Amino acid sequence: MKTPVATIVVNGLLAGLTLISLFPLLWMLSVSFMHPGEASTLPPPLLPESPTLTNYRELFMRGGMTRYLLNSALVATAITGISLLFNAMAGYAFAKLQFAGQQRLFKALIGTLIIPGQVAMMPLFLLLKQMGLVNTYGGLIAPAMASIFGIFLVRQYALSLPDELMEAARIDGAGEFRIFFSIIMPLLAPILASLALFTFLGSWNDFMWPLIVLTDAHLQTLPVALASLSREHAQDGELMMAGSVVTILPVLLLFLALQKYYIRGLLVGSVKG
Amino acid sequence: MKVPALAWGFVAPALLVIGVFFALPVMAGLALSFTDFDIYALADTHNLRFVGLDNYLRLLRTPLFWQALGNTLYFVVIGVPLSIGLSLGAALLLHARVARFTPFFRTALFAPVVTTLVAVAVVWRYLFQTRYGMVNHVLANFGIAPLDWLGDPHLAMPTIILLAVWKNFGYNMVIFLANLQAVPEEVYEAARIDGASTFQQLLYITLPILRPTLVLVGILTTAGYFQLFAEPYVMTQGGPLRSTVSVLYFMYEEGFKWWNFGTASTVAVLLFALMFAVTWTLMRVSRSESAA
Image (cartoon, rainbow over the protein chains, first blue to last red):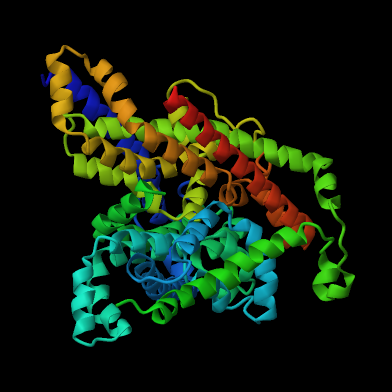
C-alpha cells in the first residue's frame, strides 16, 4: 500500500508547510544578528554577512530591555503561582466536595465563558483605578488570580481521582486542607503542570490589557514595550527583530521543554469545551 | 463524610476573584452602555447621565462603526475557514501512514501558536515590506511586481489574515490529530478490504468522525477571531483608509484614547451580542444537520 508517490507528496507537503511555519522565526533570528541597515539592501540577505550582537547590546544597554524582561517574568510568574493555587482548590472542590448549589454554580461559571472579557474592560479599569492599581503590576495580576478555564481544567482531571483516598485520610483524622495539600495536590501535578504552562504563556503574550493598564514605560511588559518601540523605531528593522527574539524566545523554549504538558492541557481543555 | 462549610472555603478565593474582577464588571459594562460616561465623568461622576439607548442608536449611525464591523466580519469569514481548513489538512498529512518525522513536523507546525502575537506582527511588517521585504523578493522570482501589502487598503486585511492563519492553525491541528489518532485502525482496515479508496475513506469515515470536533473548533475559532486587535494595532494602526479597524480596535480608541467609556461599553456589548448570535446559529445549524 505504501506507494513511493504518496510518500513523496505527503512528506513534501509537510516539509513545505514546516518551511512556511519556521521561516518567519528563523528570518527574525537571522536579521537580529545583522548590522543596522543590512536587511534593507537588495536583494534582501538571508544571513548576516558578519554576525553582530549590536542590536542586543543596544536593546539591553539603552533600550531598557532588561527591565521589560523582568516585568514580564515577574507578572507572569505571580499570575501563574496565585491562579494555580486558587484554580486547583476550586476545581478540586467542584469535582470532589459537595456543597449546596454546586452544580448550578459550576454551570453558571461555564456559561459565562461565552462572554468576551472586553465587556468588563471599562468598568474593570474604573475599579482598579479606585483601588489604586492602575499603572501597577497589581492591575495586571489581580484580575488574573483565578480563571474559569483553569477551574474547569482541574475539575475535569480531579473527577477521575478515586474517592477512597480522601475517605481513608478523613478516617485517619486528616483535615480537609491537609488532605488537599498533601494528597490531592501531588495527584493533580500533571494537570497543574499543563495549567501552569498555559497560564504563564498566556500572561507573557497578553497585550491588550497590559497596554491599557500600564502607562509608565518602566512598568511595561515585553509585548507592550515592543509595540511602542516598533512605532518609534520603524526604520530599525534589525533592532526590532532582536526585540522580537527576546520576547518570543523565553516562551518558545519553555514550550519546547514542556511540550507534552502543553499539548495535554490543550486537549483536555478542548474535548469538552 | 462531606464538610460543606470547608468546601466553600475551597471555592471562595477563586469565586471572589471572578466575582469582583469579572462578573461585577460585566454587569457594570452593560450598565455603562446606557450612560454617557466620558472624560468628564471620569473626573467627577456627577457628570454621569443615563441616556437610555442613545449610544446604541448613535453607533448604528456611525459609519466607522459599520466599517469596523465589516472589516471584522471579513477577517472572520475568510480567516476562520482558511485557518480550520489548513489545520485539518495538516492534521491529515501528519496522520497519513506514509508521513515521516512526524514528531518534528508536528512541533514545527505548532511553534507559531506559542509565539507572542505582537512580536510576530512586528516580524510580519518587515517580511511584507514593499521594497526590502522577503515576500515581495520571492514573488519577484515569479515575475510578480512588488505589492504594497500593508499600504494598500485592499491588501492590508488579507495580509493580517495570512498572519492569523499562520499563527493559529497549529492549535486546531493538534486537536484534529488527537481525534484522528483515536480512531481504531481496524475501521480503515475494513474499509480498505471493502475496496474504499483513500478519498472515500476520508469522506465517509474520517470527516463524519471529526464532525463534532469541527463544530466545536469552528465555534471557538470564530469567537477568537472576532476579538481581532493586536495585529492591526501593531501592523497598520487601523489603516490604510481605516481598512483594518476592527471592532475591538474601534472600542479601544473610543475607550482608552478618547475616554468615552459609555460608547466603548456599547461597542463591547454589541460585539458580545454578535458573537452570541453567531455561536448560537452555528450550534443550531450543526444540530439540525446531524438530526437530518
